Image 1 (cartoon, protein in one colour):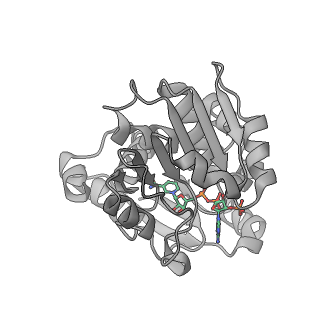
Image 2 (cartoon, protein in one colour):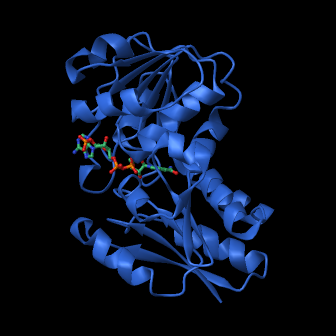
Length: 270
Ligand code: NAP
């Protein structure tokens, strides 16, 4: 039996095992997928242990999408540009890293990508890197604002990410968010704010006047974060993280097995 797992902390909210195990059984693939919760200060120790065991691949989630790069033998070129990894395939004991978040993120925006001109990305971690890459490479957006609790991390993201066209990429302080959010077309929450212990919080307050934007929260549990509930009340179109979760999972599954998800899996979760 092939063994797969998701590496992260915390993982109580994760439904990745349900999705992948349903897909494996739907296609009669002899494989299993489990949660591997690793306290943040034990990553090295645990990875070295996993390397002595027989695994076929992993997903990587908060807070390890960047730190995991130190433990890989190879990285696919686009994922290297993004600077964050959410999928590992193990071939002949070699750990090969991929990013499928950037593909999953854009799928629910397909009908809008030719019209959008501006976006505000909240966050500067592994998911935010994939979001910014995807917005630059897969849409016509010409201006992106980034805010993050730790501003230096957003500045590093803006400085390091490699992209193929000119774009206005601006890191702004939290205090300016209100002004910018008034005229922005797409707001993306790529932080943990809205889930788990932070379920009663929002990363920004949506200005009441600015309606008709799309507010996209990468969080999928809860399905409607406080940010999305406020955005909906104020007339914005909302998207949660569930479609992204399913589509990034399917791309990981393709990397591991060469197969798409059975229709039933996609129908069940979306
Ligand atoms: P990460 O690398 O650990 O980054 C976490 C981000 O959240 C950082 O920008 C961090 O800011 C910010 N943050 C954390 N706690 C905060 C707080 N109390 N107040 C303000 N900001 C805070 O994690 P990640 O992998 O990028 O994931 C980020 C989010 O995206 C998570 O909610 C995750 O579930 C979601 N996600 C969803 C999908 C999906 O398929 N739907 C895929 C990927 C990620 P600092 O830099 O200041 O620490």
